[in-house]
Image (cartoon, rainbow, N blue to C red):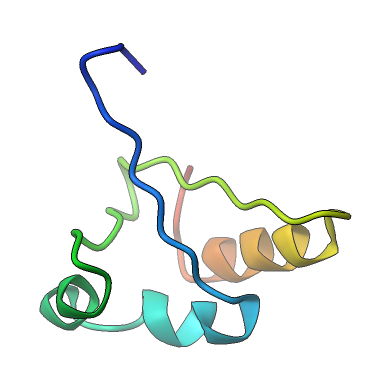
Length: 68
């Protein structure tokens, strides 16, 4: 990512992730005040202290056809 681009940070609990990634784009944007990630083009990074929740989050996103 170039310096001219800004990172987009959204904090979603792993318990809400599947539901929120299934929201219509307009509802997601209303809730988080930023566009819903694109399944094919946007890179999504998951993070947690020990890796268990981030691994689960990645599994959920993969199941929902997010590619990156």
